[in-house]
Length: 402
Image 1 (spheres, rainbow, N blue to C red):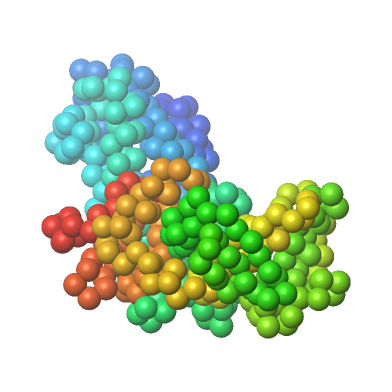
Image 2: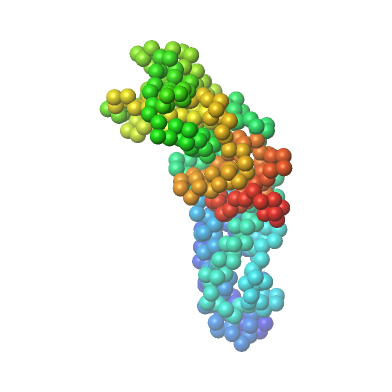
């Protein structure tokens, strides 16, 4: 490299690179370790192009990719934990993206010609994004010795903690094993299984009229479908308030039918959840389904039912061996149920699948950014993008082994 070329490189380092480096760090959310082999980035015949080609080939793709990865706190954490450094070099005058951009052992390497194919910055960014989404969490786990905290956009927009230890086979998530959980976490841990319970109950009573005797603790559909119930609480549309059944001193509900409601209060006391220990909540929106979803799974009732009496909505849970025996156990049905929910509702896919499969008796493992679950000879594989959104779920042993 002659004096002229050295001066051009130096001018780029002084005039353009500081602003580009600042953009890279801003996009990533932290100071990214950069190892740039400046003396290799030289093509004597094309040195006059470097002010235009260097940004397009080496730096703008990084900025675009880091912005895509770091759209939330989880992305920033994963990038910082899994990306050891970025190497920019020209060793082989390569311009094929599959060979020029690699990510191995936490090192993102851009080994690209400084002038050829300069205008396809978006393609380079997409290549970087693909590599990071596929491998970043793997290197993050290797660096920290554990999976990073799970966080994803949810209906409640509440950050999540890392996945908890698996429950024993065929055992639901128990309240005494839920340390330092939030209401949002309890809901997300319950959501998928609760939806399954509601679907099964809906199929059992479809088209049937109902009647309820709260003082007797019985809910009847048609002529012969009688269910034992527990009363959770009531929501008044007129008063815009929720009243827990354990605090309802006016209704005269026998304590026998307040067991689940009382246990919800105990759950709130154990984990300092004010929503579960405050007798009456002033709220413009009805929280009954939210609370009942948690109760039906965490406290292992069969499902919940909202019943309307003269402007007052009463939420009860059902206890039914018949309903419990209809729970879906076939891997294909479990996968189908989850796929349908993922297509219809907004919730943290990876986090919720983890707990759904645990509740089904599976031993659940994080494999890179994916989930592998085993229950005897049955296996289920969930494949997710970097943000924890479902890409594919399969019970095919061929897909699982691959």
